[in-house]
Length: 473
Image (cartoon, rainbow, N blue to C red; front, side, top):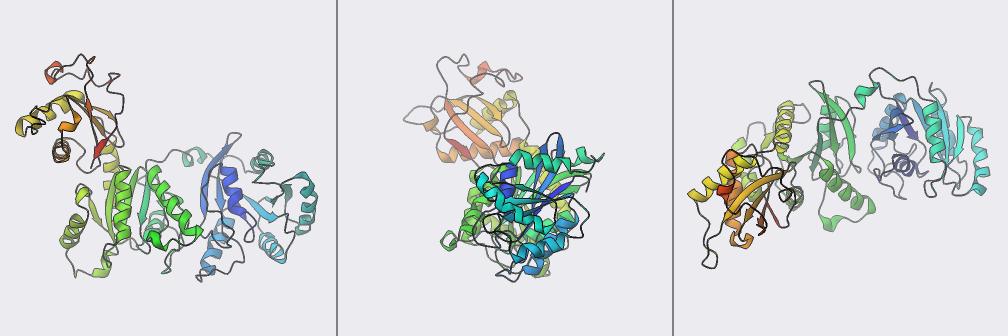
């Protein structure tokens, strides 16, 4: 890979994930006192003094994993070391040199890249002298740091950049903004990590039958048809009553944050399992965030034609009645069957959610809808919509200026949403719909003030305000 990788390694509990978050300036990796929390490689794109590089967090060397995933974790660590341009060898000043540090140093002895020994947890200058004993390891320049007290961050970054190889001609391409960020979410053991490995064409994530193998939300960059994308693998969710550890708690919140920052969400279901309460809670959260999404029924090969797709489609439609617009895909993530078609459709959804429709077109649709199906009287008075305008994309957000928002009951709002879906390029993406009372100062007193082919309301100051109480679906 053209983009240089800075890999953080060390024994468990020396503060590797804290160091990763500190250098990145964000809370990305889960930090916990329990050894072995980090399993998969975490990456983050950074820039310092004009040089781009990927920071990589790894699991602790020598950990005995409670779920018997020790070999898989070690493979992830070795893969990271093999691709490193610079290695940060993290040690703990407070605990001093221990035998496992010597084991890490032995593994690094024959690598042909610069190594920086980072003596972490040196919260004050008085502790710096304790770091001198790590010179015995004979591995690279030593620097004392403290993520808690923010000591020597700039100095460490300067050391990293000074040891980077010459910039590659393809480096700029690797730092380009991805076309789309896709969050892969679902309950445990639905095949999310296997799907990500298929996209990356590599064993990028640890996969196993053990529930909860993935603990962090991990960004994985991949390419499709010459375009770069980001797949965000998230921890499998379980019922809130079963959230008993800090790792589960932070995993849940990392998954929710991944949904919020994604452009599109793939909600995974296991074709061999019934839909659970966790699935329903997850779908509710995605709907609350108004994210374009796809219901992905994975492991379809395991049914081997014993069930028609129509039956699963009807099952999903009956279960998620407020998300009838969401498209459904049937894939086999392990073999890649239907995966490219899923990604192509996801791109189309993303493009649809970014479109903007003119005010004139919206007004024609609203007038036609109200003529065909007028809203009921409210307190013996007619409900009127004066004009409509779209104020934003992602999600498409439409404001209807009316005489009384309370005059439009929820069923009629759903009717209007259905009309918009049928007549606008938003058939399979969520729409935010606001109803706002027209101000007396607004010169447009009724819809006839907006000419059928005019876009004059598109950029008005009043249209740019976002009113409260949205209706979505």
